Amino acid sequence: MPMRGFRLAAISCVLAILAACGGGSSNPGGGKTSTSTTAYVALPSSDQVAVYRVDSSNHFTNIVGSPFTAGTAPTTVLVHPSNKFIYSLNQGSSNISLFTPDNRTGVLTEVLPRTSTGLSPASMLMNKAGSMIFVLNQADHDISVYSVNSSSGALTGIPGSPFATASHPAAMTLSRVENFLYVANINLNSVSAFSVAADGSLQAVPNSPFPLAGSGPTAVATGASDHFLYAINQNSSNVSIMTINSTTGALSE
Image (cartoon, rainbow, N blue to C red; front, top):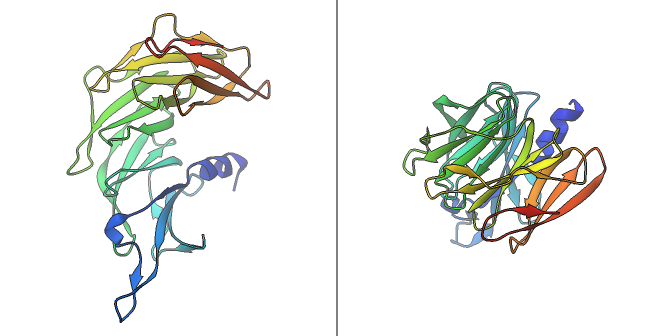
């Protein structure tokens, strides 16, 4: 597998406990014999999503029929909090695949048509409630925001979407309380900040984007208390630490 594909596949593995599976299998006497979780892995080089059962000893078992066809070059897999829907972000075909998992067998069934994104989507996030999905479109320099239908899992672009961001965005993250969204701009050595409204709409924070001392930020994350934001700088091989203004969302390094 090419290095790019390997890196993307490695960071796209998502584990989720599927409560509908009953937590394991039963013996004839009715006792539970094992518990398991399910792992979903994006395989960008083969345009597929692999599914594994993971037992209590962390042994991975490929389910029957896996891997399953997705769009071109999937890079990220998200599991809905209800465990009823699985989403893959397909960077090569600029769209999102929606799958429904069989709670007994683990088999994925894709629900067509796929949802279009902007060009070359690089990152996908879901809020904790599973009501919104955010997609960072690298080639279009913007962010698409979708509402999630809780019954069908279908995605609908919200009014005003997509929302413009700075040039060459590389990665994004939501604050822990989900009132701010931050975007790493790899070529500008900066982080853009947006306030997030209840309907998912985005508004640029005053004075955004905020400059970094490091070079080539490729990933961002917030701390557990939302006091700090961390940016990994690929070109300068270091990590920038920025304080977050809890009221405005503004950053200072």
